[in-house]
Length: 171
Image (cartoon, rainbow, N blue to C red; front, side, top):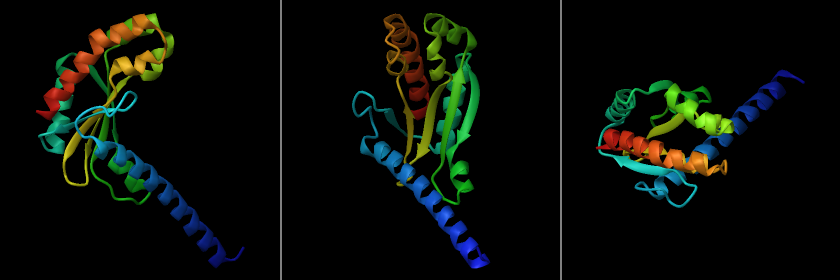
């Protein structure tokens, strides 16, 4: 294969990758913009509009999580990930958080539920500049395991806590 063919093949491959990533991003944004105030239906994430800037929303969210004695386990910066493939995007970060003592109680009831831990909340800037906080209710995530005790624990302990974090970040 000569040099022009190699270059064309390389550029074609890059273009396919960018188109794939962009298509996924557009689908994700479509879900977000569809209803910025609540879960659309069972199985869809809860989307809450923030009255704060992106930076203030993220800070308030982290402060609320830490204020309840939970650990921030990771931060995934989606904007930086998109830059890797050459795509400009709005600000977006997912924060993973957990408390080992709480996780131990849940995992004792259902070891497979480790897949849902740490819990995650995303803060995202929309195309219109608005800020939203996105999450799944823990009880919804844990209900997939068919263990009623686990689902009740999540509904009683985790759902109100995550809702409080989001309320603190968005008000």
